[in-house]
Image 1 (cartoon, helix red, strand yellow):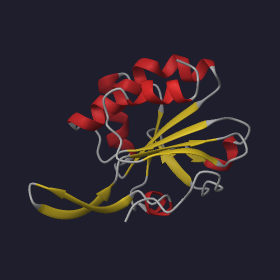
Image 2 (cartoon, one colour):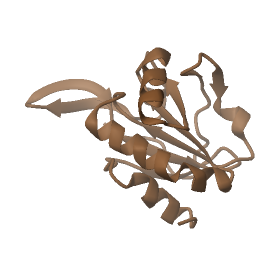
Image 3 (spheres, helix red, strand yellow):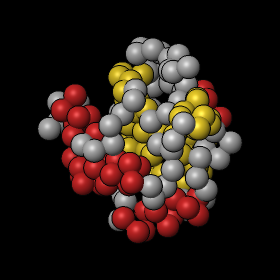
Image 4 (tube, rainbow, N blue to C red):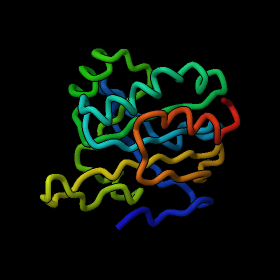
Length: 156
């Protein structure tokens, strides 16, 4: 399936809860660059590596006014445990019904051990201050992903 959105498109607005139950609306972050990274599941090897890469570079993002959000179908409680366990400073949003992942084209068929199932396709979006998609990363490799973004944003 894959992402149907294109660079330059207006990013679909959404409202999702974070690990504390606070609601975040994408349009409330207009005027800032936003990184949305969609990941499959809290506390799994690849997702932990990706989250920790953002954690380790978080200060560089925030020093440049860039908001980082991780989005997965996990519950706010799961996000809270995950963030506490690994000291994650970025906001993790719960897309329990995967409607936001679907709107962004990040929900689709996956295969693990020969078994097909539906899930989050690891994808990252950079959204510019006007709310438009600046860059899309599909089939993200979790290790070092934050470094790749910083380089593309000319921060690293």
